Each structure stands twice: as structure tokens, then as C-alpha cells.
Image (cartoon, rainbow, N blue to C red; front, top):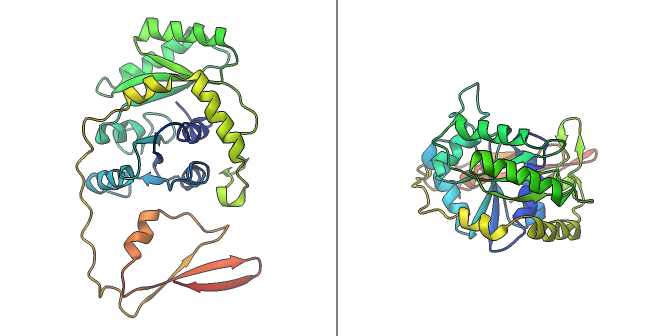
Length: 278
């Protein structure tokens, strides 16, 4: 529903559950995709509608789905937050409609009861064309509290509540003043994430979640025309890639992979630079 309320680590844990899975991030966020990849073991991708047109984004999504049975797509900020105040430009809701994907709303259940139904109802009616398929409640400490929230939401909103996310030690993502610490700077405790995924199997109706996630068809996409094999002949492209400079879209390096172009990776190792040619 909004930032810093567990959407990133819920996506990572959910993507570790059943079937061949992949994680995807809406918008220009490189930190979350790094953690998706490190924890899930499958390369995550960005869907950035500010940088790429819809046909290319659709093609990128379809390419990502070739390696998976299900994609867990993490939104950007709140559901309707995009560029400016237009909810249909660069927002999670706009991307869901473009791809034809259902939306599972993750809402904060801490210190609230029936009022949460009013919050969900606001999201539900803000855009009636959006396929809001279900709700999962975050930060719930007891089953009694969860049942109260579930009953309120299902009664007033007629949306299925699929489960809740309890507190779980050892799965918080490390942060600093600029946001999350990058995955390459951290050690990932895979056992803690496996334990958390097992917990979600008990508190979330995964079967119902999977049944709501079926797409009738993948969206139609089209890759841009690739340059011929002589493009970039005689040129050397240097790419900084280290702990300080590593925010790149994977699709960018794919586009640079033309036979005539020499791509060099510049890595800063403490006080020395080393040039790696590949």
C-alpha cells in the first residue's frame, strides 16, 4: 500500500514458495531487484514505464515469464503513485492494467481494526477498472486480530482476504539514510528467508493466491530493432561496476552486447582501479 511496509521482503519470501518463480519490480528501483535476485536465486527485472514504451515493457515481461510459472511483481510506492498526480502514468496500477495482471493489496494492519476496511474500500473504488483481486494484511501479531480485520474487509469490501504477514525475526532488509543497503554489500541469510517463506505458507492461503494469479494470455510485446553486427565498430565502452556504481538495468547490458563493440567493466577496488575486458 505504501513504502516501507514490507512489500519488498514479502515479495522475496513469496517468490521462494511453490512453482518456478521470478520477481519483478515496477519502476526505477535497483535496490529491490538486487535483493530479489540474491534471495530468490533468479534474476529480477525492472518494468520502468518512464524509460521504455509499452511494447518493449510487454516483451521484457514475457521474456521474464519464459523462465517461470509465476511472477511476483512488486509495485512502486503506493498503488496509484506515479509521475505527478496522474494515477495512470508510471504507477503500479497502470502497469497492472497494461500487463493484465491482478493486484493483491498489501495493507498495514498494525493498531487498526474496522478502519482498515475503509482504507481498502478507498483503493477499491478509486479506479473501478483495476482488477483488485484480494488483500493480504501486514504486521499482524495474532490470529484473533487477523480474523477481526478479515471479517471487516470481506464484509464491507467483498474482497477476499488471503492471509496475513506476522513479525518474523531475521528477515528485515538492512537500511541506511538513503534506503536499503545493496544486496552485494550484505550477507543474505538464506535459512531465515526459507523459514519466513514456510511461515507464509501457514498464514497465507497460497493456493487461493495462485488461483487468482492466472493470466488468460501474456501481453503482446515487441523488441526494438537491434543494431547490425557492425554497430560500434572500433569503439570501447567503459562501464563502472562496483559497490558504489552498480545501478543498471540488465536490459541495458543486453542492448550493448553487439559483436563489434568492446565492453570494459571498470571496478573500483579500495584505492586502485582494475580494468576487466570482456
